[in-house]
Image (tube, rainbow, N blue to C red):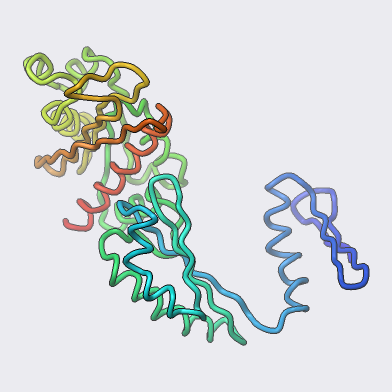
Length: 290
């Protein structure tokens, strides 16, 4: 059976030999993905005896073992729907899957299980059926009519990139600064030189001044900053590699958080990515409490 490709040139097909079916699709993701959804899935449904539906619960701030410990009794008692945890980079994904005769019946089975997970894990759940932290942050900013600016040192613009990778970011994100040097911290963001001399670039005081400066320079409701030691060198006994300070400024108020993200298996890239995830999670908490 030939699958028409409305997204490219090469068609796909399904070839059956006895009880075995081979499905072939063109390789480019822009063609393969919609063909899987629009062509292959309807084809496969002919051979099914029901509907399988999953919902995704995204968790941040709890490790996989901690999530499993808190949900163990629920996971062991829940067969339909089933609950499966997956460890991701800095977070945990819970896939809740039900099988029934119709989509509506699946949704009826899924709802209480998802509600029970959210009730047990509380604020560690940052979203249900969402793709990422940055997606939820942007959605909450738009919902409340708020704007956000960034000031990044150790993360080198990665936080801004994660936000602007999403369409519609310009509605809530006027801009950000990669203030890698102290000269930029003072000259652009207004971090006092005495703050840098007394406390250093990696400090609560500097993170606070950077966040306030970002909000001021870009005329935003919120400012978020990251300053730290991503490694592999540059750490000290007082501030080892992986030490990161995050600042969250909101309408003149500011708070800071120290993150200890180092470890023997933590690369420079991983520390930077984890730092931006923590910043997004803290932002989300701040926004929801406004």
